[in-house]
Image 1 (cartoon, rainbow, N blue to C red):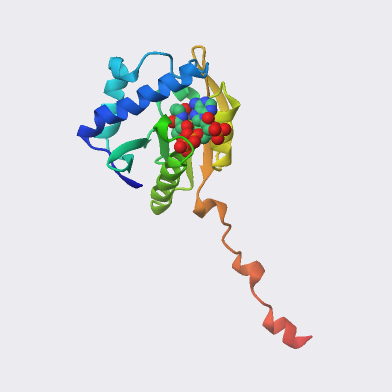
Image 2: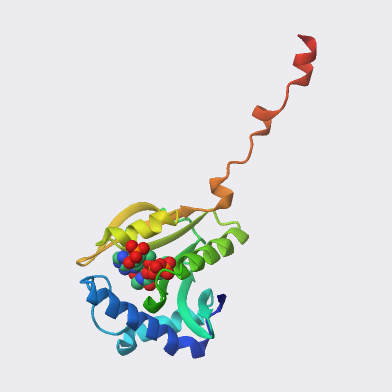
Length: 192
Ligand SMILES: CC(C)(COP(=O)(O)OP(=O)(O)OC[C@H]1O[C@@H](n2cnc3c(N)ncnc32)[C@H](O)[C@@H]1OP(=O)(O)O)[C@@H](O)C(=O)NCCC(=O)NCCS
């Protein structure tokens, strides 16, 4: 699998994996997450995908020349998180979108895209990476928890329930040794 920046001509393939996900969610009785209408038929979702591609920091996962995953990172949390905006460290990456081809389920493509995003954020010395997801299905939240994300706060957009999550990155998770505490007191030892 390779991961490369998303390009303008990837739009149809990206929308197509969103469409497959919408159908998959609907078939599982989970249409409350993304509705039942194909994203490729929703003007606002087509524009959203174009916006994500155009702003950079969006990536596709490719297996055998086929796009099988998409992740989009943004610098500003989406407006719908409302007042929770203040809980997010400025300038951090926020995962605005993550989707993988449901025909490739179980390969860990989403996990690889998450690791890729985390590595990008670590390179920029970010302490946290953030995302939100639908708060109506414990297995989706469980998926992110398994990936190291922690629940911050639930929120509502009308009747749609979401939850804000964050993951500490390397510079945050690994405590730097405290030099004062760990210095060997050679002078004192010699005296005693
Ligand atoms: C979430 C996602 C990107 C993870 O991709 P991945 O790392 O390739 O992992 P998989 O697709 O194998 O899914 C991992 C598990 O999460 C579950 N899961 C994934 N999306 C889910 C959802 N929206 N609601 C409930 N469970 C979900 C899968 O059923 C699977 O469970 P299992 O291990 O018990 O079979 C991918 O499953 C996906 O595109 N889901 C649909 C769209 C979506 O919900 N995107 C995230 C928006 S925040």
